[in-house]
Image (cartoon, rainbow, N blue to C red; front, side, top):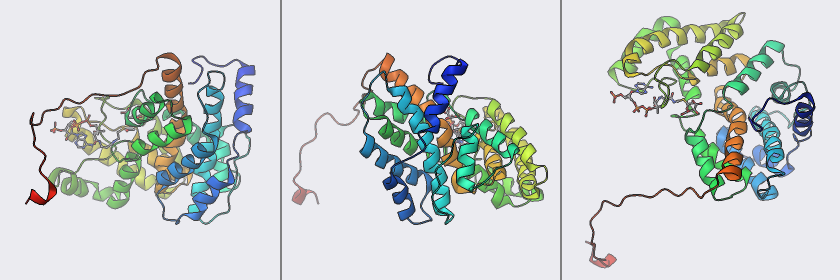
Length: 328
Ligand SMILES: CC(=O)SCCNC(=O)CCNC(=O)[C@H](O)C(C)(C)COP(=O)(O)OP(=O)(O)OC[C@H]1O[C@@H](n2cnc3c(N)ncnc32)[C@H](O)[C@@H]1OP(=O)(O)O
Ligand SMILES: O=C([O-])CC(=O)C(=O)O
């Protein structure tokens, strides 16, 4: 993602070492997370923590250093997100430790002990599937910040703020909330009729600005949701609800090119790994951080220009200034 080529063994080891030695974050970032109310929203907490890192590190752009800073940021994102979970669950702070994968280091820091292989594998796949997707709203927001030569940590804050919305990265949480609201597979049809057909609500986890067919990542998430559902009745119930809802959604909306997107099944995977709904967008962010950084660095190093759109003024050509006291 960062270097444009698959690494040689020695390159991979160098990147892995850099990642493993970068999990520490300044105490002020962890203290800030723990000082805020437990109900605080996850992406807001990530923005706050990254604001602290931006203030303390404030790195300048240097070709020789940018990619190393990117790896440091990915490691620190895992630390921040694991500790947001721990703070919200009333657990003590814990720094991720080196392991065979970022997925394992992150999960074991969050949950505070050994995590079974099938959950680590599902997390690893989720980190890969969400890593990058061209220039969606969050990447665009971060690119605008990067184009001003703002520091890389601040660019992440910009990207996070756009990711959070339910039309973008927040959709996995909204999709899963639908499954919870429905409650059982036999209630899907009635819920769909009332909410989607009659009240004309948007079916969350469906539709995409680019795809006019099934999002290929959704099929892979579904496969891992199925694996996590085996032996877990609660996950199986949500999967059954999702499958029925998917069928009704495709029957109703495929004519408009609206199909399930990557967020439709990902929440079931995150829930199956053991995370509550409030973590879903944060996990998306943990994965997408690498893709964002690759875009920012490529843009600044290879085609840098300040991003500054113009607007076409369509109002009246002449307006007189009326003093406040004369405005009625
Ligand atoms: C990782 C990601 O960010 S993936 C996207 C995650 N977001 C969601 O799942 C939220 C739900 N989806 C949506 O709101 C939209 O599909 C978006 C914002 C993602 C993309 O929207 P656009 O490409 O701009 O589609 P647009 O809003 O123009 O809709 C086109 C038509 O499809 C319909 N449509 C699009 N998405 C949906 C949906 N989820 N449910 C019902 N109808 C939909 C619209 O009502 C519209 O119908 P019309 O032509 O009869 O008015
Ligand atoms: O590409 C988009 O518009 C949304 C996105 O980030 C994704 O699908 O991963």
